[in-house]
Length: 313
Image (tube, rainbow, N blue to C red):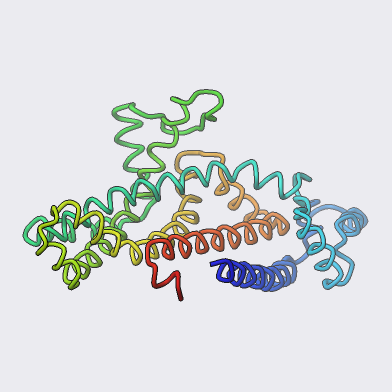
């Protein structure tokens, strides 16, 4: 297992390093006259040159990259061209909001998906068909549309939750829960549909295994066979789908955050992209790659724990 983790860490480092090189050169080459965009189109050329010199944009691109990479290794991703705030601070102050929504949506979708998948695999009639049709239908609905409907019904009409805004957990735990409930539900609906389908299929396949039939023939309680053996065997494929859903939800949170006016990475990403704030966009690329790597590593470790054969290989 230690060798496996070290191999994954090395592969992740090489992947993020390669992505950094490609993203840096693509972003900086496509930045255009960044200095003029920052000081304004009508600014005198002297002011533009001064800004470009201040940002180091006149130096060779390879020199800029080596300087950026040296800082990135130490956790310094540079400063925003427009606000002067460090990229690390800009991202770390907003990351907890996005991670809270993503993790909450993944946990909620996993719980509901397992329940629906188990029911669908054991009730192969009208209930199974109803769950399948509902899953496919919900998976096709865009997340932002679900968010708008939830805000319209439960926030504006029923007034059960606030329509916009964010309360930090340190200020009010109840207020914090009220501001993240609708966004988490909006994110989790589509993910639930995909994971439920995978759980259902894996459960059906696991029920056909010889050792499961043997356990039932020995008279073990059905609940124990179902949850201790069949579900554990079916969990590995579902975990892979859940890991992919985490990555999708991490990106989908950008749109949902805008609907509910939450101070997460979504607002930062949209602002930085529209302004052409390359250091911030670069930081977002690296942060996203790091999150993807950590999630994939965690999924691999969980699958190794669930499946001894995978752990031995």
